[in-house]
Image (cartoon, rainbow, N blue to C red; front, side):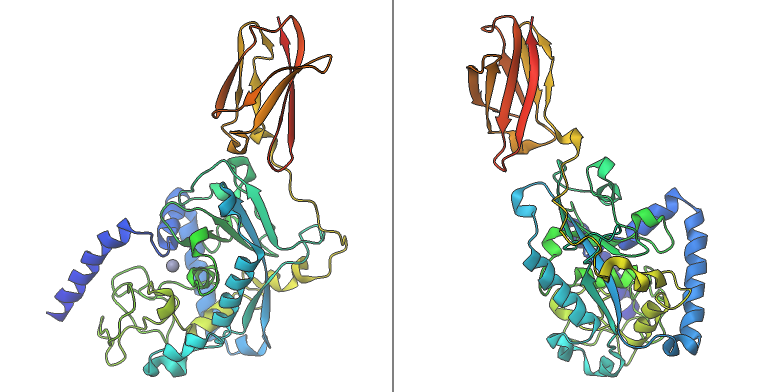
Length: 407
Ligand SMILES: [Zn+2]
C-alpha cells in the first residue's frame, strides 16, 4: 500500500509541475542533448566513472587545500528595461550562493537533525570576474539588449548570432546567462558537452537574495545529479544521500519514507531536490567530494582555478558597454522611392514611439512625427526629386540616420 501511495503522489505531481514553472530543466535538457548527439552519452558515463574513482581516491583531500574560488560572469539578456538586472541583485544572489556552498546560510539550522552530521561546508566560493578573457577590466556583469521576448530551453541565448550573448572561455569562467525563460527557473549544461554551451541559464525571476535555483544548478554544473537520479528510486552516485523515489515539492514537515530509506527518509532539505527555497539547506559530504573532484588536478573543471578571471587586469579601464549588433539597426527601404517607404524596427522596439524627422539637403525639416509601430510607413508624395535624410533619436541618446532618394 505504501508503494502504491508513493507512486500515486508522483503521478499526481507531474502534471502540476508541468503547468507551473519547472524548478529545474537540467534533466530534460540533458535528454535533448543526448538525443541530438548520441556520443555524449558515452562521454557522460566515462566522466561519471572518473568522478567515482576520484572520489574514492585517498589523494582527493590532500591535493586540495583551502577554499577553491571560481570566477563568474553574468550575461544578462534584457528585452524590457525592467529586465536589466542590477549589480545589487547579482551581489545578493552571489551572497546566497556562497553562503550555501560554505554552509554559512542561517537556515542551515532547519536541516532535519538526522542529516545534520552529513551537511558539508563545500569550501567552494564564487566571485565576479575582474578580468575578461583578454585581461581587460570587467565588472563581471554584461548587459545586452535582445529582441527576443522570452527564451525556450535550448542554447540560443548562448550565441550573439542567435540574438543572445557569447559565453566567455568556459575553461576560465562559470558563464551564467540571466534572461526571461518561458517555463523554467534554470538549467545547467551537460558535463563533457561542447565548451561553447558550458554554463547555467537562469530565469531572471529566480535571481536575487535567498533564491536557491542557482545553488541547485551550480550543483549540476559541478557534477551533481538530482537525489532520485532522474529515475524512480534512481541513483545519484553519492553514498550519503538516501535513495528517494522522486522529487519533493513545497516543504514537508514530516519524515518521508520512500524506496525503503527508513528510518531517515528522504533528504528533502538537500539543494538537489525540488523543495522550496526556504526548505533547501544542505549539500552532503558525499556531494562535496563529488563536486571538488572535478576541480582537482586532471579534473574537468581544474582549469578554472588557473583562470585569468580573478587576476589583476592588464588594461585597467572598464570597456565601454558592448555596442548593439548591426542586425538590430532599423532598416529603411526602398532607398530609392517614388510613393512611399517604410522602416522596420521589429528587431529593436526601443525605437517605437520615438520621434523622427525627414530633412532635405538644405537642412530644412520636411516631415516629422513618431514611429507608430514596428513597421512604420512614410509617404514621399510631397517631396521633390532629390536626396533626403531620415533622422531619429532614441531615449538613450543613440542617433539613427539613413539617406534615401526621391525619384
Ligand atoms: Zn536540477
